[in-house]
Amino acid sequence: MVNYKDLGLVNTREMFKRAVNGGYAIPAFNFNTMEQMQAIVQAAVETKSPVIMQVSKGARNYANATILRYMAEGAVAYAKELGCEHPEIVLHLDHGDSFELCKDCIDMGFSSVMYDGSSLPYEENIRISRQVVEYAHKYDVTVECELGVLAGVEDEVASEVSHYTKPEEVIDFATRTGCDSLAISIGTSHGAYKFKPEQCTRDPKTGRLVPPPLAFDVLAEIEQKLPGFPIVLHGSSSVPQDEVDTINKFGGNLPDAVGIPEEQLRKAAKSAVCKINIDSDSRLAMTAAIRKYLAEHPDHFDPRQYLKPARENMKKMYIHKIVNVLGSDGKLAE
Ligand SMILES: [Zn+2]
Image 1 (tube, rainbow, N blue to C red):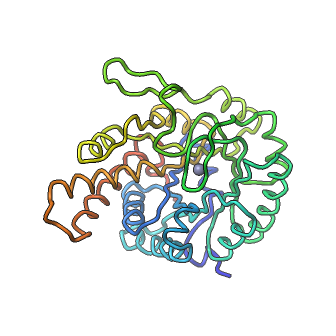
Image 2 (image 1 turned 90 degrees about the vertical axis):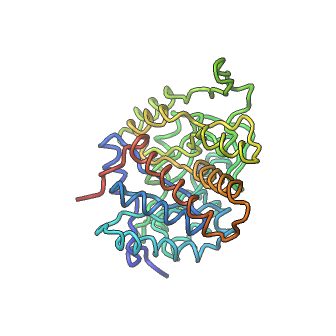
Image 3 (image 1 turned 180 degrees about the horizontal axis):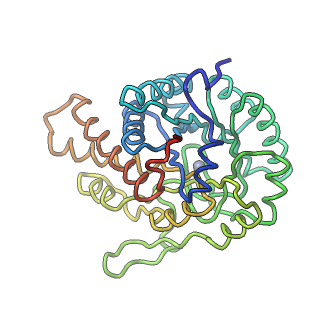
């Protein structure tokens, strides 16, 4: 049993309280590799932002949960080395699908876990969510639960259709589970192909897809039922068109990839939404930089040569999100 506090990590409770009151959101970036971890920490330190580093099922399969836990411990030490005296770094399990998995992560030093029972019948979702919360709170680990179903594909979480969260259920759900934050479905979606072309309109000038707007009316209703309660948005990459263009220019093929416009995320961050999950944008930034570098330097073969610009490009993206979209820059606790 390792307690996250001994690793220098923090849970989400205090930072969410400040984010809800301050009208901004905490970035939750997924990570699988050392370069992503370094870019996340550098961006958080330079902008003086709290940050959530999250681990999905795919990340655990790819990198191994133990290694990722040590990387998070390393992230705290690295942030201090970069000059941040009191970094606020959360190690969060993304989409935990069983009590056992959540327990394993808590026992190995995660400071926050998500239990995702959104695909289960309502009462079953409450029962297991409650079980996770009871265990987690013994160790002061915070728990995110989910109501409503997001469309899209994220590692091994996939759904064809989305169901908006029903505002009439949120009070009962939050009270009976005791969860610390609630992931809701208001039209965001996992992956780089968030919407089918027939769900979108097309900008006549650029020919690009324009996605349907988020259901801000549903968000407002939820906020009214649970004033001040931390709300989480999954599937909130914006799929920057310049990165998609770079990928396609240098041999890639991502036609009609589309994400959530940043103006909409900024608007959501100003409300009760206090955690915004971004994964695909980091993948796109990394892939675009690597494709470009290799196309321009066909004689290079040292991974450090192309991973360096990839890391730089991800860091630039993380800083942009923190400063221009989420507004969490300069928000470390005094
Ligand atoms: Zn998700």
